[in-house]
Image 1: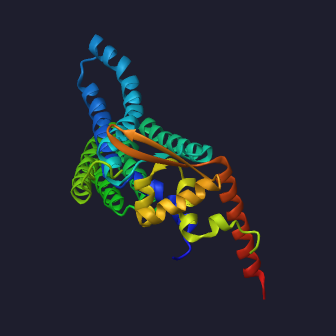
Image 2 (image 1 turned 135 degrees about the vertical axis):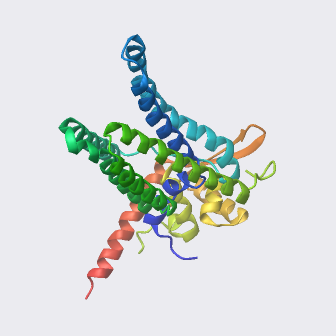
Amino acid sequence: MQYPNLDDIGRRPQQYWNVDGLPEVIMGLLWMLWGGAWLFGETLPHDWRWNLYWMFTPLVLVLTGCAAVWATKWLKARYTFPRTGYVDWKEPSRATRLAAGGLALVTAMILVTILRAGGDARQHTAPVLGVILSLAFVVASIRQRAPHLLALAGVALALGVALGSVGGGWTTANWLFVWLGAASAVVGVVRLARFIRKHPRPSLGEA
Amino acid sequence: MTDLDRVIHEPGRLLIVALLAAVKEADFLWIQRESELTKGNLSSHLSKLEEAGYVEIEKTYRGKVPLTLLRLTRHGKAAFDSYRRSMNGLLARTAARP
């Protein structure tokens, strides 16, 4: 038996998170919900309905973000763990949380700057968001050794460029979320179906 | 070389300990899949690691399905960290030799 590569082994749990397609399904549905909620809100007349909708929707959207992690773990407990084993992942380190928070903040600042600039700059919202999401998928693909995420990186980039040519600022950015979410959910469902086919549930007593 | 922990140094056990060091806890099935060890081989290595106080084994149930949960003890984590440091030092000394 060869001596194991300890760095490689340290990354295995992270790769296992992506083994079944469930994170892509949940992330895709979440993005569709987020994009759809903003797009729907923009169609409301500017009266009490607008006020009521925007009073609660941001909070609901934040809560759905938290619920997504819970839902992914619940589905994994139901479909993944009985087939390929149970893992309780470690919480991300403080440095990882800070890096993720910093990146989200920088992204938000870039988008706010573009949107506040108005005029032609607003047309770049979707392409810029597409590039940022595409880069995030590339990094995740390398870190988790998940080549299918490169396909989503390509979709994010292509959608960003395509929607950028249509123009429309924040509205097109939300359409980007909706379409990219749909692509992610489709990729996830295909991978989940393949995973379930490849790994039948072991009979009682094998876990 | 004499500084190296013989319990962890065996490749199969090193693999198990390294896998458990990367998670809070995992079950027998996941460790078996990731290590590609046979059930018997894995059980034997786990017994040795449990004897050394490096691994905690909890037999439980998920519904009606028996489940063997495995986690690294604090002692096991310290032993693994110490092993990594010793190994890195050894490799650094070897690389520095003319």
